[in-house]
Image 1 (tube, rainbow, N blue to C red):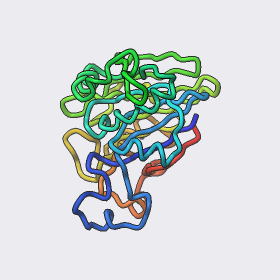
Image 2: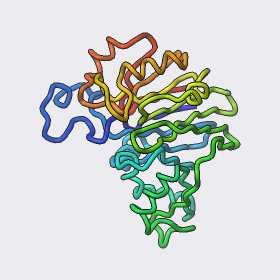
Image 3: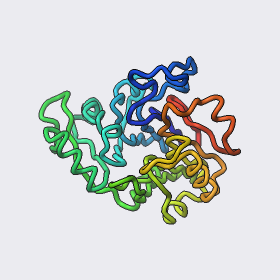
Image 4: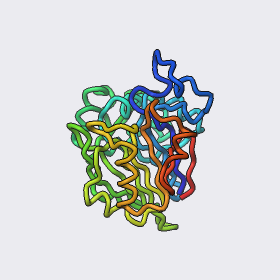
Length: 259
């Protein structure tokens, strides 16, 4: 299984607009963060999780040329605003609607933002079409399984996702945008070869885990390899990563994991 981090930043991105702090001005490319999303290749199946505002640019940068399954974790702008650019993948699917797996809240947001795209087929070549489907607890596919669990994120719930590739039986967990890990989420992630956790910033936040809370979550899961994502400009990749607990690292845009 391959995991490609298309973006690892927050809703403001890094560098931030009108900010000249040391991280925003940093020459370290790992401090340049587009909004968070991942692309998972599981036994040849290409799964895209979320579509950030920079989704088109992320796909061009990482040469993403195939998309079979799309999962929207929740309907916040930094995860949904790039969905219009999924239109190219509808073309590549032969003019079929792209199935969008999400929550009730995610469906409502897609309906309000992209009403023109809710159809069985695009209205014309080059247009997007979405088929909205409730993400089940277990999505069983020929290439493996994707389990889902709800994670609290302020006034909404985010989808936490656990991928298990059929051929290798390797497990990967992706828990972005959450304030805490419910017991079910911890249990589902146990045994994962790698876990990605929301680690917004060093200081507490009302709807995201802080770096310390994310590290505690990694310990509870027992993860050998934990990566923190959804980072702000309060994190300077190089010096701050050196202070992390063993087995915990910061993800960065363009990082590729072989799980």
